[in-house]
Amino acid sequence: FLKIKLAGGIPDAPPRASIFDEPDKLPPVATEIAEAIRAAATDERISGLYLHIDGVSVGSGNAWELREAITAFQAADKPCVVYAEALT
Image (tube, rainbow, N blue to C red; front, side, top):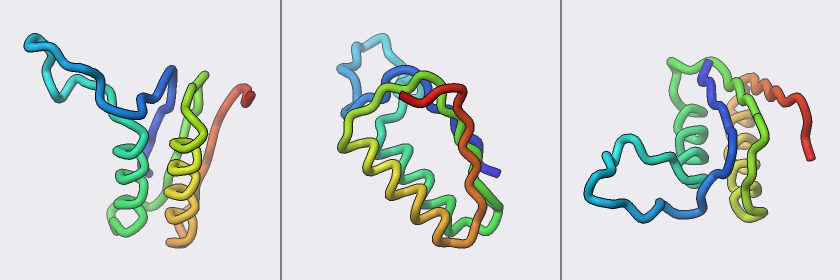
């Protein structure tokens, strides 16, 4: 299973980096998360998706992008499990 935890704010664009930031330590943007989910849909090593939602804040356009990626994952006949204590 691919395990993804969505927590806090998911940026629309990469944050402005300083010379002290390590590129690998910057949080992923919503489109990168969606791309990873779509890639997992066709990856035979990944049998399903576990999505943990914990107080996430995302814009409506990016929420739609993530929704479409999850729908594509499900269309590949792979199970998708979403866990959240509360959705608002």
